[in-house]
Amino acid sequence: GVIPRTALPEVLRRIGELSREHGVRVANVFHAGDGNLHPLVLFDEAVPGQAERAEEVSAAILGLCIEYGGSITGEHGVGVDKVAYLPKMFTDDDLQTMQMVRCAFDPAGIANPRKVFPAPRLCGEIPGRHHGAPPLAHVGEVF
Image (cartoon, rainbow, N blue to C red; front, side, top):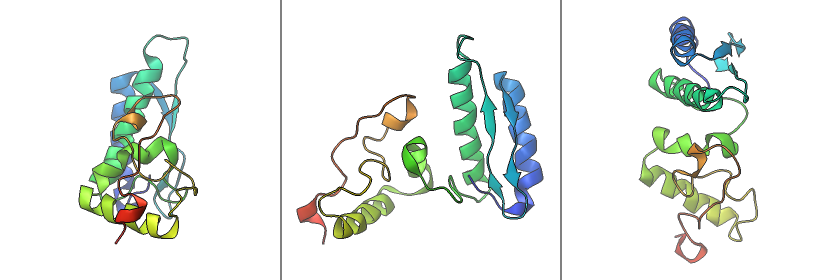
């Protein structure tokens, strides 16, 4: 995610709290000059529950980015890892409008399908391979 540079000390402090509360280490790598965060949430899959706690910390960090006036993405795009968090930043109407614009430029739905908009809303919250649903707007409904 990305945050305003002025929020960097407070957000890093809060990430430290999340790390301690969830029992996973977080290596904070970031661009201090532009507020882009690249937290490395470390976990061992062999330790029961640790991967789930790491996912919770990652989600909470994205929530902090939004809370402090930033975004879930700053320089790398949304992709499958963050698509489920778009509704935390945008209203349903916003997402519908974005989907309509996308359909106008890609009526066949061949440009990166299911990697820009959440479909279904909760599929991105579960780690692993995700299967999408029909887009929010269909080709004949664009305008």
